[in-house]
Structure formats: structure tokens, C-alpha cells
Image 1 (cartoon, one colour):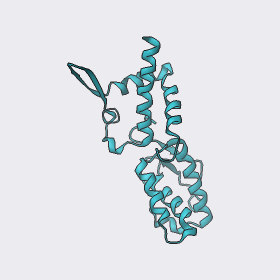
Image 2: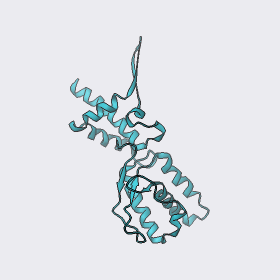
Image 3: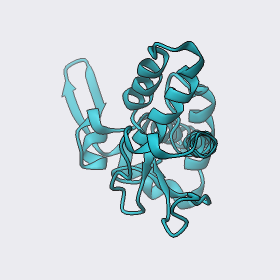
Image 4: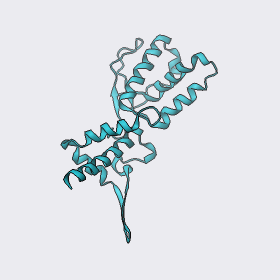
Length: 183
């Protein structure tokens, strides 16, 4: 989840019409994922709504290994229906593993698992790097630390994926747990 700017995962799937093309999926921001669903359920033909959601997910997430977008909504109209359905299922399955979104996953469980991984000794330098990316304010009543994930990832908070936000939260939880253990 800490990949900058986004996770790119090669797919073990080839298009029948272009078997030489290496396909990949990029993680999505929650708003991008939700937009696919929102626009898809608005399809005027109820029987085609699920297909439209799948097509929109493919367009949003399918990319080259470089991360460059691979297709447009219109391009997918040329794919046979069965191949488009298979591709949508493959993309959706890949997104489940690399792109958790707040509206589609068990956020508490994701953060729990990420936090457990962050506690591993090999991940502690990264946890410290994340936790120390923040603003500190000290006043008469004490101190306050405001996390700044934009500094860690080097991009605006609005560009972060939900998975990246979950990883930041998990790192902070792991840091607190390390303080209890070492404290």
C-alpha cells in the first residue's frame, strides 16, 4: 500500500484479440471506484448495469506496466461480451487485493492486518518515516501531532488511494503499539 504514487500489478491474463499485450491494474482512489459504480447503476437498461459497472472499472484500473491508461470506455465496445466479462472479473479480483476502498471493504480488518505487518522489525524504519511526516504544535496545554501523508507520498492528500490512507493509519497504530511494548 505504500507504493508511490499507486500500486501497479501485472495481470496474468491476455486478451484474445491482443495476446502480446501485457496488462496491469493500478490501484484506484475511493472516489474513482465509487464513480464506476454510481455511473454504472445509472445505466438505462437494468440488465446491463452490472456489465456497465465492470466496463467502467476496467477503464479506470486497466493500464500498461508503466501505469499509463490502456483503454477508453468506447474501446471496450469492440470486445466480445464474454471476453469483457472475464476481463472485468479479473480486474475486479485484482483490485480486491491491491486497492481496498472504504465503501467496498472491511476497513477495520484491513488496518488490523496492515498494522500487524507494520510491527515486523523490517518495517519499523518505514513506520518511523510515516509517523515523522507530520506537523507538531506545542503549547501551554501540551503538544499535538498532525499526520501529513502528503509529505510521505509526495503528492496531495486528495490523490491518495484509500489503501494508502489505511496504511498511514496502520503505521500510526503500529507506532503506538511499539511505544507500549518498548515504553
